[in-house]
Length: 111
Image 1 (tube, helix red, strand yellow):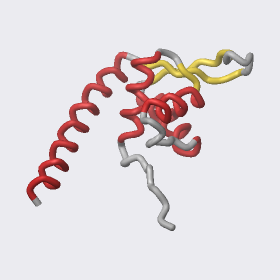
Image 2 (tube, one colour):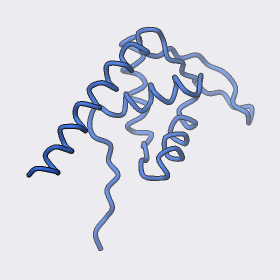
Image 3 (cartoon, rainbow, N blue to C red):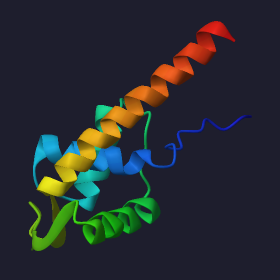
């Protein structure tokens, strides 16, 4: 039986995380993955093994800021917020994504 793949194209994880944080405000990692899963109608799943290294890279780039806090269940978690640099990167990533998907649509339509 073939497996259904829902791998995220390389480079789109940052776009999805930044968009989530821009729309929802500060979130911890599990809440980010849950939001992406639910808002994609369960078509996209972000694994912890991909998310946390990506968040670390985005923090190093200055796109997100992390701070420790308590979840609704009173557990310690690192909450991430998008920065001004992250908002600029989000706009650039959205533009690149739009161009990419337009190119793919052209190939599918005219190939």
